[in-house]
Length: 143
Image (tube, rainbow, N blue to C red):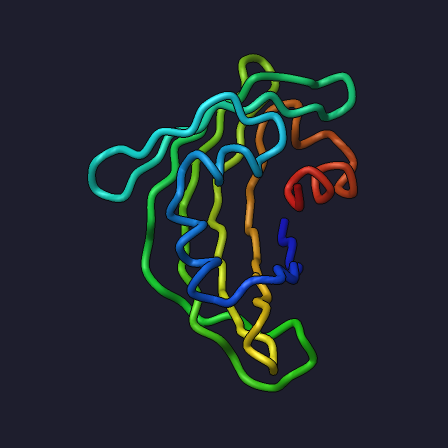
C-alpha cells in the first residue's frame, strides 16, 4: 500500500526542521501517541493506540532513520525533492502488523514564509489488518 500527501505549515523550513527535532512537540502532534522515545543510533520507539474500527489496538512501533531518497513533488511543480526516510515495524497485539517506510521532504513555499511537508508512506500489512478496507488503512496512515 502506498499513501502520498502534503501538508502546508505556516513556518519557515528552518523552524519546521527544528520542530521535527523536538520529541515532545512531535509526540503531541501524533494522535493517540502514548510514548515516543529516541534511542541510540537514530532509532525511535513509539506506542500508539490506533482506532481502526473494531480493531482498536495498542501498537508498539520501532523506527529508524534510513537513507536519504528522492520524492516526486506533489505541489504541481516538476522534478523531485530530497527526502529523509524512516523505516518502521509496528505490531499490534492480536490485530496484525505493519512494516514499511516513510519518506518526508520539506519544501519552502515561494515566499519562504511557509513550508510544505510532502510525504509518502509505503506499508505492508499482515494479520487481521490486511483484511480491512484499503480506504480505512489509508486514512489511518495519513493521520
